[in-house]
Length: 86
Image 1 (tube, rainbow, N blue to C red):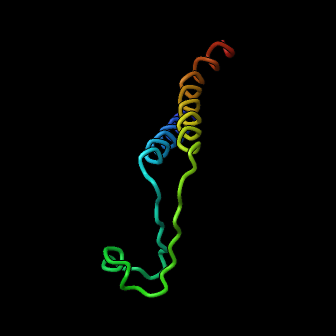
Image 2: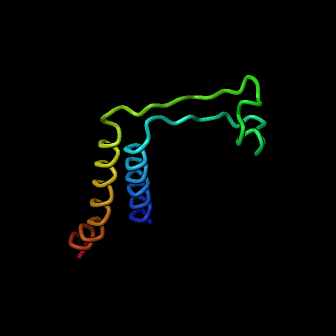
């Protein structure tokens, strides 16, 4: 179970790293009382809280490398436990 959890975390980190390589900035909207129409046209809602996030130059590479290390390490976990227990 732990192996699959760490593989999933590593793959998610790799996906986030690749996504941050291709974006310049991301805008996050608050979820308070929003509807689908407000999501399509956010200018109609007054006072809606938004957060603009711009990843640093090093961020995608850090997340990609950490995700790759977690995936590689999680694939070696069963082999490490098998040789020590038998």
